[in-house]
Picture 1 (cartoon, rainbow, N blue to C red):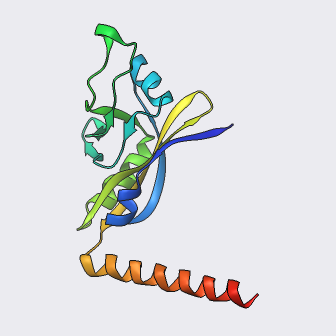
Picture 2 (picture 1 turned 180 degrees about the vertical axis):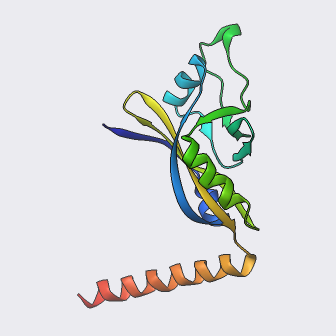
Picture 3 (picture 1 turned 90 degrees about the vertical axis):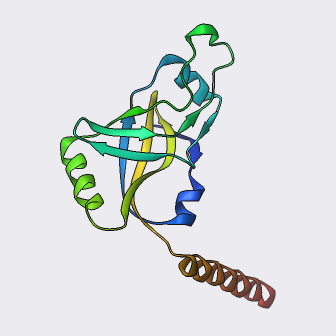
Length: 150
């Protein structure tokens, strides 16, 4: 099956240490799918709510479809994530640990279906973000030096 990435959540990788990832289906309305085909989605503010009635994707912005007229969807409505019961239990167990949450990392088409990759994540402190930035810059400098030597 061909995978076409619609959007990635770069903010999640900056703000969190991303751990185990899960692929989830998502229950959408027709105009939402058409808006996704036009790549009108923003995952950066999204988060996953794990409740008694399953997993819900909240605060994810899917823009209006341009030809949707009165049948258009609400842009930030909660959307049900379709996960197996065993995956839900793993997520609930991970979230019960202090400082862990579940965030969407990317949304993509897998064949004709829309899938959302969600990950268990732990928040980074400000000094951790600085360390990562410093390490990236050092790696870039090393790559440049190696390239000049060749």
